[in-house]
Length: 87
Image (cartoon, rainbow, N blue to C red; front, top):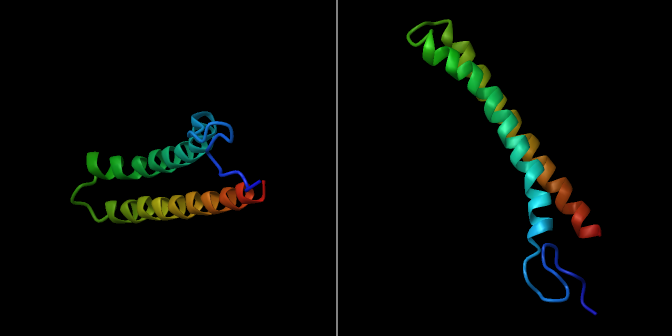
């Protein structure tokens, strides 16, 4: 018997939407968390400090938050893929 494919039901061969949603939910939550965290400094700069030199560090901070968020999501996806391949 060939190994089972992740996200597919063995009996019917159709996509297992329950497992797919279970795996997509934490990824979406991580993306949303880092997007909201980065939105805070961007919103402060947009609302109050548009042409100010003080706004530049806040923009750099927001970009740093986004970079850390991308790395975190990527590491989570790779780790979860390795776990799924061992199941």
